[in-house]
Image (cartoon, rainbow, N blue to C red):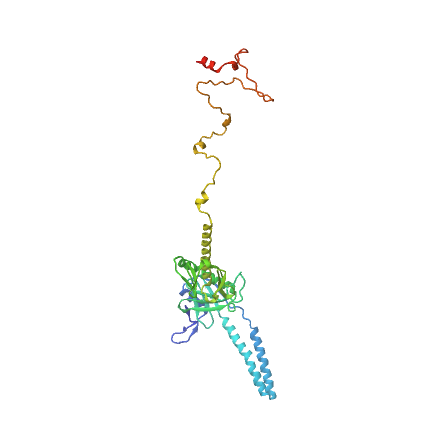
Length: 369
C-alpha cells in the first residue's frame, strides 16, 4: 500500500496544504498495515559531491573561454565552447538534484514488514508474509556484493526499488529483508509442496517430482547442482549445464533456492538408497550356512554334554562290557609303570601261595554259583 506524502490540513476553509512530516506518515502506514514494533531505520548513504563540483569547474572553464572568444570577436568559437559547457553543467545539475532528493529518503524495518520513503514520493509499505522481493545480485561466501539492489512488490500495486547507493549499510538491510521474507513464507511453501502442489517462481515452477522451466521438465534425480553465480541461475543436469534465467527475475530467490535444494537432496538420497539395496545379496542367500565337512551334532548330543569340571574318560579308554556270565576281574592295587615300560603284576592279598593267574575262569564261575 502507498500513501501520499502530503495531505490537506491547516485551518478549516483555508484549503492551504501543509506538508506532513515523513515520520508521521510512516507511523500511519505501520499502523494501517499492522507492521508491529519498529526495529531499525536506515538513512541515505553519505552523498559525495565531488562529481558535481568537478562538473561545475569544467563548465565554468568552458564559459570563461567562450567569453574570451566573444570579446576578441571569435563568435563561432564562443558558440562552440558554450555548447560544450552545457554537457558538464547539465550533469552537475542532475546529480545535485538527485543528491538532495535522496537525502530525505529513509528505510524502516518493523516486526512484520517495512516501509520505504523518498522525498516527493508516496510511502510504500510491505508485509513479510505477502511481499515479493527480487535481488539483482546474490552474494556468496559472505563477500560484499558489488551491486546490492532490491525491488519490492506487494498487494495493491505497491512497489519500491533501492540499492546500496541510496541507503547506507546495504549488507545489513539486505540480509534483514531477505531473512524476514524467507522465514515467514518458507513454511507455507514447504507445506504446499508436501501437499503435492506446484509453487511458481516466475518462469520456474517446483513440485515433488521435478523442476519445470518454460514448459520443459527436469526430474530431481537428474539434477546434480543448482548455481546462481554471476547473476544467472543455472543447473547441472546429468553432467551438462543448463542456463535458466537471471536472478533478478526470480521472486523470493532464497525461498526458491531452499526448496530446490531440499527436493534435490531428497531425490539423491532416495536414489542412493535404492542403488545400495539392489547391490546387496538377498537375505536367503546371505543366511544360508556354509557346508560342514564334519559330522552333524544333534540337539540331544548338545544337551548331553557334561558340566564344567567333570572328568570324562576318552572313548578309547572305555572297555566293552563283558559277556553275560563272565566275571569281571579288577585288580586290588594299581599297577606301577617303570622307566623301561614293563608292567608289574599286583600282589594278591590272599597270600603268597595263591595266585589269580593260575585260576581257570570257568572254575571260578562254578565256584561263585
